[in-house]
Image (cartoon, rainbow, N blue to C red; front, side, top):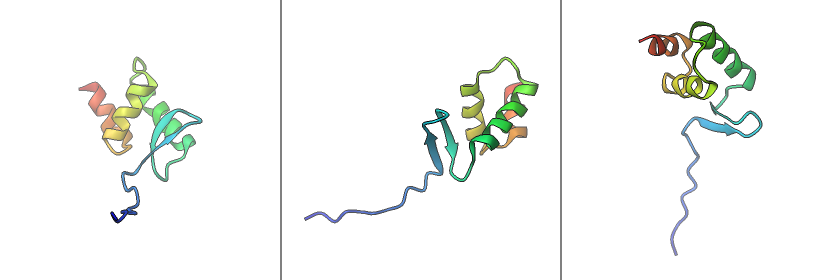
Length: 71
């Protein structure tokens, strides 16, 4: 009989079905919306999905996300 591994998911990302956004664990919807708004203030022509993906790539750092879009 195979032994089941009961490892905890440590990916750090959860999918919020209410807002339909992938978020890092421990983050709240309001905090993520604030970050999206901050990025959108500088880069208004990007979609929420694009902004969320880049935010996640840069570990939810607004400054690095904005810099990535500008470059």
